[in-house]
Length: 507
Image (cartoon, rainbow, N blue to C red):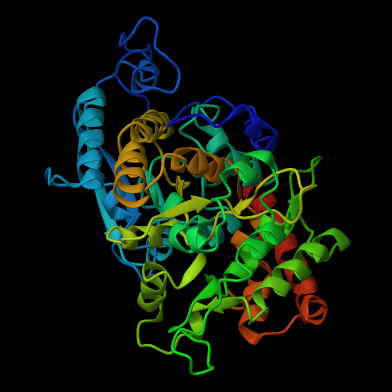
């Protein structure tokens, strides 16, 4: 993909160095052969398939299965685009970019390492139960698992996952999301991480789509240069769309039949909060432990601005306000039919707009103001990560296979998504590559949001990570009272998690 312009560098001081890695745990089952790089290319260029291949050991596991537990679908609403299993397995070439890239990657891995990739697929919300049952029964059934981040949090909290820093993984390489490595660690241990091994984390990333036809009618230019200059802010966005609202049917009632400045959903309250620099928790730089941040004065500025936007019913229309039987499809049709200048949603939604006659573009989420240093994009809980169960007795084998799986995915699966799906079939302009680079390089991985501390029961959605979504749905900015109700419970859950992890390490 094209590199961002030099001017954008000032906005991309967001990537962090990976934490130092330890060597593999001694005594685990080894492999046959020497761990020496394959002689693929004497001078491989960095960030190429040739470079990735040069790092893979010259070994042959003689058909040994690489056992992957994978979530069949990470969303109950969108089985096709949320289908994580299609990122892992493919049976035959179908002239479908994602499928064919997966098959190509798997064949390369099997030929290179002499392994047989085997996948066990489980339905939405069942993967964590399956993996936990396997671990508690001491059944070494799976080498790795790919599933939703919030599915992995109870397993991590109970000390059931391997510290990925104990594996021989090259976390400094581009196929690992460096922000996830830095922000998802707890007490200098990493229990799950985001990588190029699948694309669901990219599909579920929130961004700002805009309708070029409506911009042309308002005689405003696509704000790409504003993005590069660091002036793409929420006020600039609102000002750009201020005159677009139209009562199309003339009945005096504004609804899904009319034209809106911004079309979004309740969950965007949380995404705006992060875009404006907010976090639920931030890490103590000494202990590497999450600490509640959402109640701070700085966070409150971002909270008030996010709710101000979401509760402005004159400018912002929410999908949940649509009364049709399929409100999400109706919302997609509204954008296709030029009924919203801006659509704040995840990138999966753009795949529904392939046949849209009007052009549209993709932008990062706007900043709070021009003084804010970085653009920020929340990595939502629909995103997926990889983990290793602590019953895995073959960590050396797993390290080799997982690293190769992730690195080869970057130049097969990821390229198929970027080049064919996003740029070729969906987006219509040459700036897309730069915008996507910026969006994916500035994602936030917040332990407070992902663990949703303060939640009720086993499923996230009622804790600190979802306060703003719930307030947007209620149409009220009563954050202070809601925070007062939940912060002690959230802190107690943080303390319990840290204590459990310490106990598990001592066992």
